[in-house]
Image (cartoon, rainbow, N blue to C red):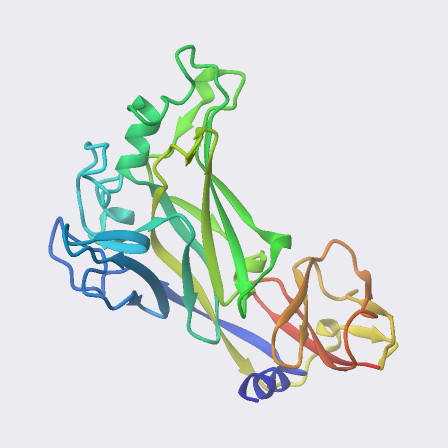
Length: 324
């Protein structure tokens, strides 16, 4: 009911945006060290975000970091093997800061209610970078002996709401790309690069997941070390005001109530993203707004109260309708 009340308060309202930053500097960490979840807590918290962690305890060998996140201040940008799981190729956090996070395959980040992701900085781990550049007994040197192999190491970021993935709007970022006809354009990321997700479904997600893929695949799966680094996560907090919306900021719906086809008029709203949500706040569909007139088939959805939410990263407009 709390979510329903929140969305009802959004009706006929305009949102103001306040920024929040997660930089991991609030985590107590000695210089050139790391936290890998050995304490068994299962997650790290920084700012308004939670970073799940998996650590396997072995009675004979002590234990292993097997998934999720580790928090690091490691400055080793040279050692490119399994002994350096926690180093960033940059040898520091973004902008020379001390702390950053290292993620494994399928790592996720969740934030507190009332926030939306707008961007973050990404770079390669030293382990992945050095393996891609030089190869080893298990992984190939990208480009091959000739340098012409079209290799890649890619990070795909998926948005989730209430455990349901919003496949329509994932974000891709190449940590290494050797697919160019001109080999001089091939690259491996060795700096902190900002990924802007403010105009994507990641902005409306309560959780985001990071999936790594590579062209170097063997009989046991991906050969490239599946690690990357993240820092300075930017979020926006939506603070609602109860001012009556101006005419130029409304969504026109027809018919309402509706049985099957809903006509949506966004004539006074430019671009952005439109989401269909049920009365519990679950996102059912996400559309990139390319035109001012949209038709939406809602026949497949059960009867009840629904919401259309539009945002362009600066403003938020919500409109309710009834599905008969």
